[in-house]
Image (cartoon, rainbow, N blue to C red; front, side, top):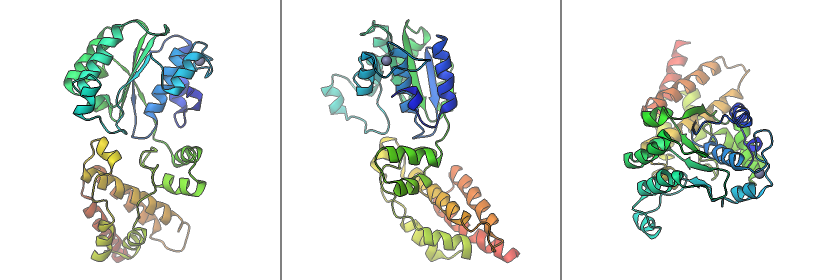
Length: 329
Ligand SMILES: [Zn+2]
């Protein structure tokens, strides 16, 4: 993919293209952003631009032999680490591929190979996803290469939170903060991949700043119970109905990313609150004077979820807050 085709990150793309035109791209770049905001896509598009034989204004041409290999995912000079949206190979699978495990792969394929000359001659790009989750042994292998970056080698690192990245790695890379994708961008992405428009917009409406989790149909949302809690007040059976709709196992995609069930629940309830906000907004402007207060309460509860407050308590607070608001009137 060309940089100009990357969605949702226009200012970062512009900056990277300007740096590329002036030959000033740093040897290590750290892309920080929420899950599904396009960190991997941007890294791949930049790698393609770096290795392109006939770059056009800091972007790849999309037509040369190098670009074709990059687009097919076969470029010998683009080495990409495991991505957390795919399940991690098992110990057996690693052994079959000749490695002791993921750390060994990083140490040998990235730490050591960075010092070997390029295969096609224009340079080499190593893309390392979720660099904050690297085992210390793997991180140290990478660090060695970052300390004295071999000529023509670039490291594109990605993370959800740069604060979680080893400070020695962070200080040797230039950080670029990617923006969460808005609903329209997520919907456009889903539509481009063949999901019908109305369904794409429905899923995008519940998205969390990225496309992650939007590729499969949304699980049932207890919207009626949520709406009643927000408008009529606390009733334990409505809370129970919502709690019963929470997933009982960690979905494979979240499991691969190392998420716990509690974290999945918080994410699901945050989505519900966003959908509820969309519903409640439709009542604006209207005769009910409590609508703005309900919207503010949903936003406050979303913040509570970020503080690791239990989803069940948040759901209860949704109803109790409604009662309080009604009593005050
Ligand atoms: Zn090209």
